[in-house]
Image 1: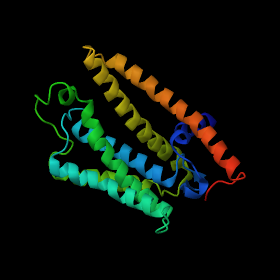
Image 2 (image 1 turned 90 degrees about the vertical axis):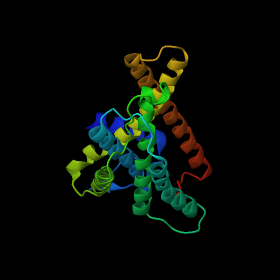
Image 3 (image 1 turned 120 degrees about the vertical axis):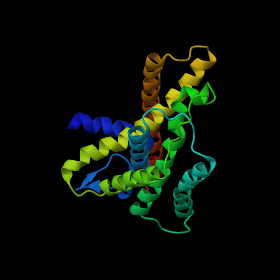
Image 4 (image 1 turned 180 degrees about the horizontal axis):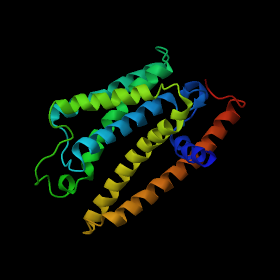
Length: 236
């Protein structure tokens, strides 16, 4: 499906170097982003699926302080892996990049998704508080979703490539759209026009498309500059 390959490449190339040596494959087919980005966006997608499936769109509050700190700590492994490997202190692998990216990506929607609630931004949470996690069993379900996403990235079946790639790019688009929607709705609220959701959806979607288009252009010229300096060779 050439058209779908172009769509996946458009979004993946905008945010990732896509070096073959750092990219996971499904039966020889390279995924649309590198191993670390694959983990990040799969973690994002799995968390969105969990939040929407388990809590619906009723979430209107951030996690408790203790839960927030625990979830935020999930960002640390990726930071340690990235900084230590780039600094030459240790070698890393695609599997480690993926797993640390998965935990970091999973944490992001926990904080971004509640911001979509008008009660959190405008009304100060006057309605009944609905947090991302309710009962302790919610954490079990969430971790199960992450484990399933992690296992899916190493599926050996060629037919599974497109569903997996779409899920990855879906997580990427989802977090960008989430943030764009929050920014625009806060801007409209300041202008006294809160609640125009259909119009805000369109504006947020166009904003995401514009951002990815600009990132594609930047990536193209940045890679051209790197290859010119390095004599046509990309880093391993």
